[in-house]
Length: 86
Image (cartoon, rainbow, N blue to C red):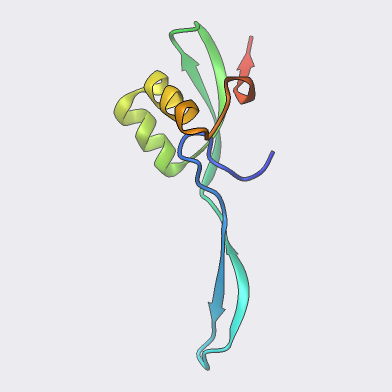
């Protein structure tokens, strides 16, 4: 699976390394991703998500269920992509 946050949709972007003499070479800015287990109360199960630090703050602020519904509505993840642990 690629390095994309399932809550915010953040992914890596391309930019430049700029040296002291202002020479530019390409580089990637990676996302601060975590593979995290959450207890999904509405379905009474554990799920695994790849979330960024910003995604963790969103889950803490509005709750897991609301964050998942918002991510699915915006197209950042599907219900099929969410890994359920028995």
